Length: 446
Image: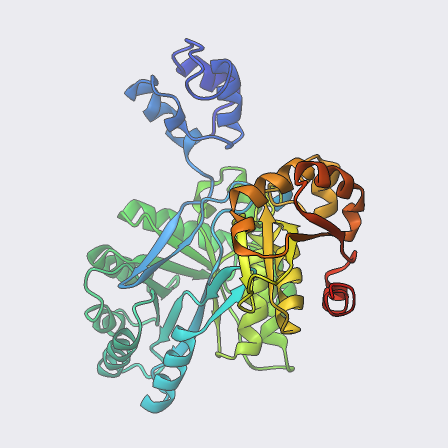
């Protein structure tokens, strides 16, 4: 049972040293009880107290890390039900299922395309996290061959899906030194698969149709010594799956330890067109730690990656780009200088419009703490002083012959102040929307 704040306070040194970042030990204790800080932040807590506080300091959902030769997939460590309460920490790993009954050529094409798939989204590289190799044939030699082929093609983490421990063991032999997930343990075979997970240092996936069944197996697996567990609520239909995933998260956050583990969701390509996309999107939004897609298709994967990035972005911290001077279409000394903030959507809106029109320009991105133009201006983060500082700091004057700066139309009021800050420059007020920049540059900046 988790301890209340006042109980935690009694176990702290009570020196009020402030080294943890809080004014008093009581304030730190309350944050610790709310799962908002780590116990390690207190440099003077005793070892005896650490043992007693272990449960209160432990995140309600265990962190499980799957390791491949060229990357990791992490799930867990979540502490809230809704992202606006704090934030979500570890993005759900998105895996592609590969059945060992498929032809070698088909497997090679799928793995090659999926492992190399990457997209640039507002300055971030997005891609898939691994593969789930399914022992559909029941042949251990075949599974071993497919696992070996997949591993030769990619170093991404793997999930081995199957119910026969002997077959799974053959696949594990191809993954020395790695930490895959063994997915397929249920009420009939969990003990044998748990032994296999212990022997090879793998995570154990437990599948059950009810919370009671999952909790019972989790407790038994813990007693056996398996610490990294992943829960698979095997529900039929989107509604039932949503209900079980939500109940697991709620109970975990209430410190019901038998369910304090990441979950995994499998989507199927069967049924109405697009059903797998809906199921995967639901899993990303509603608490899955790992999502296994039945197929690889860019039109399916891309929106899921973008959705995942949006859901798992800290809502209190906007996505930012690095403040700097950016070159668009190889600008020369005669190219105009455009100014904007470092809010990523603002930056890419401006850059894409100008680049798409084939117009050369210098784009000065100021440090506005990730705010959009109007928000930053209202907050005093985008003003004449900050623009002038960026222009001088990035050495813009040395790159151009004509000293011409275009500021966003929404901040026309800054033009007079900016002329005072940069008396050698000509200040122009550009359009309010990025989409109007190409026409403005062609018709006005002549």
